[in-house]
Image (cartoon, rainbow over all chains, first blue to last red; front, side, top):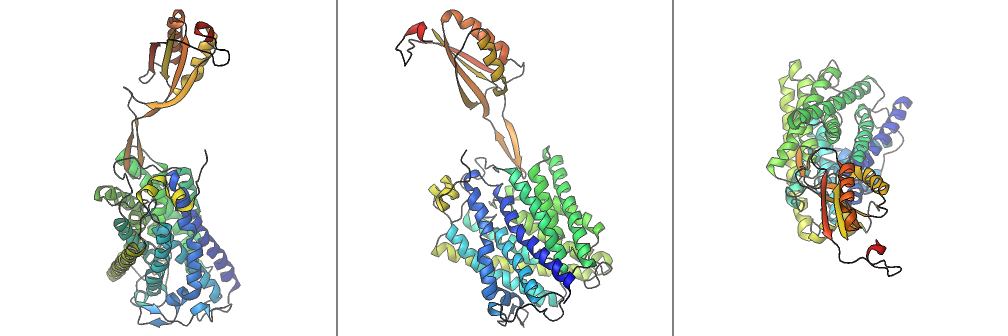
Length: 403
Length: 112
């Protein structure tokens, strides 16, 4: 065991935990004031729900002994045998690794809440979170990090571009389409009610992302340092790229654009953070900001109401990040990774595309089944009167502001 | 007696109120209203989606005066509320049949 690594990973874990309340603020500012509390709660309560199922059976489904590359076995049920001593080949206590991975499992279903914000029934949301985390997140997490087929055939995902962002983005697309548009979408103005809250949330996410990406090195070493720097570079470039793209295209640079672009850059660098150089991160971040901006514009044309743009930012940004890793990854940066297209290995780009495609298909299909089943049994959407009144009052008997 | 309704730009309220006080008008009622005339609203952009906001905030002042004062009051408001730019507002004048002070029951000019 290495005490330096352990201390670093404990702090990184706490930083990733803070991302979920950060996401709550990021999303909360973007909805109308009548839905602010429900939106905050949908992210926050994932800390409660996912933690329990992680301890009971989630960790073992993701990281138990591999079964055919698809899922983990039941050896760590109830965290049996997961204790203070490091697992084989690790320098940190097994429980620290388990806690670090838990925080990733928490934020992923929280990301999806942006798609059905302002209209989902809270009970339906809770059931969805349990089922989706169990049947989509844990298997895909196993494929990439638990010894499953994606890591087995050489796919690279440093900190969760596939597991977290592509996965949640694909589910968000299905959710937005199944639950339908918010009342008045496209006809009346649906304004963000507090963009300063959104900017604070984006700042907390950016801060937490250092734990997310640098911590994914699982050691306080040079790879962590590389991931830390590429994270900063890509976030900065993403914010600037979206800001200027919007400025050029629509005449004004906006706060929401800068915040969204920073998140787009962070999403884009996630899979490659420990495999690409800081110089490559400039290109990945700039392109990430522009690509996600265009993807969000396309949503308005395509006509599905992904309320807070989970698909445009996490889905599309995640796919760009996976492909960019296939282009810019370099063994000179990380001998444990691979060379990408621009370093003479075109095959990595192909492998990355296959991984992204497989994750999208799996997430779309299983999310569809889960959401359809919930819609039939509980109903996904609140009554129209409740939606008009706002979810804060209709679902929680609270209001965010008494002004 | 006449009632004067003036729609003005919100940031001109203090100027108008002070000017009216200076000519001896010591009471008025105001409402925060929204509306539009020749002045267009504005555009808001959120993640690429553009919304046109037509109704913009204005202040509506209402005051009742003796008919002999009407001209002076209107001139005073026009002077104080004028910026020279489109959207400065409008003034409406209408007759008032009766004014009654609730506390004392006084009527007419005494009650203004």
